[in-house]
Amino acid sequence: MVSIKDIAKQAGVSISTVSYALNGNPKVTEETTARILAVANELNYVPNAAARSLKRRETKIIGVFLTDFSGAFYGDLLQGVKEVLSVKGYDLIVCSGKQSHRMLPERLVDGAIILDETFASEELASYAERGHKLVVLDRELNHSNINQVLLDNKAGAALAVEFLLEQGHRKLYVLTGPRGSFDSRQRLAAATQVVERISGASLSVIEGDFNKSSGEHAAARLITDGVIRANGEPAAIFCFNDEMAIGMCHYLQRNHPDIIIGQDLHLIGFDNLELASYMHPRLSTIDYSKRKWGAIAAEQLLRLIGGQEVEQERIYVSLVRGETVGSASE
Image (cartoon, rainbow, N blue to C red; front, side):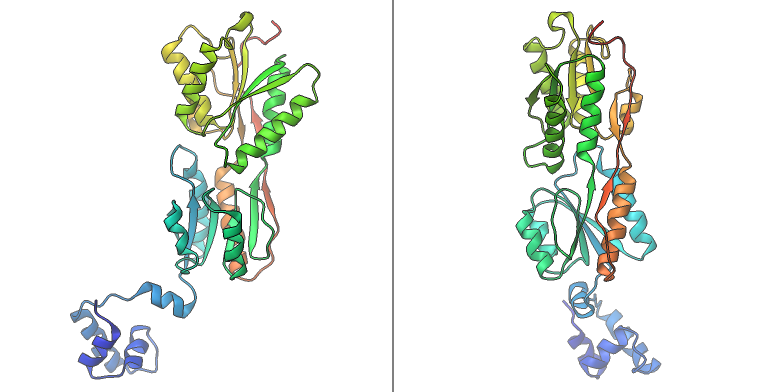
């Protein structure tokens, strides 16, 4: 790989002169700069971005770290991040996997937005101690270099459970996300709390993973266990995201087309994915702006990087009622 030392040797100047010329420093005359640039072009010189960023202590790049890229959830979130960063002259890089964690200690990004359960909270705290600026979307951490922009999972789960209780149900099922998910734990805690306040109500938990396939598996299990159409009453199921609710509907429509959503099964999801609005009947779900979530996270991170004060933010939710046919008491 060609270095500035090679350019300096061929151009007959010092290394510092080459460095000044490549960075447009007026200390070097236009004639000398032109000669150095011509030599650099002739040698196919490519600047070492990592070295330059270490010298300048900035990369103008923000990292977004995700657990994975599956499902339809992330597009709007990332678009919200990108829109804010673009206006401020920053680029975006999206990462997944433990090997990508090294981008923080190696300072290949100026800051990071974290929605990735593979990061231990202790690991993030150690980066914050070393001066790295972070915004977390999936946990609660208190540090001057960390800001939290959290979804109001508890309010959303409470709305979902109350929606099913309003239909007259007292036996409820929930399909959770993976055990390591902060959002899933928060939703389960809130759902349990609401049910415990209602006399005669109960909650059964089925473990899922936020993917469509786990919704399909849960539907098959509920059919086998006789939950759906048990005693002629509709079942009540809260899926902790729309992906799993959609998987459940697809399984039933494909394998049990005689089962009617809204009559034999009252179902509610979480996230209000675009696909949910095209289902028939329309899926009941918990809505919030994923784009706004990403935008606020980016804004808060840039404030941290700029040394400005930030406040903890919360993304509020609302209930979207789908079409229902009848109720549990009819």
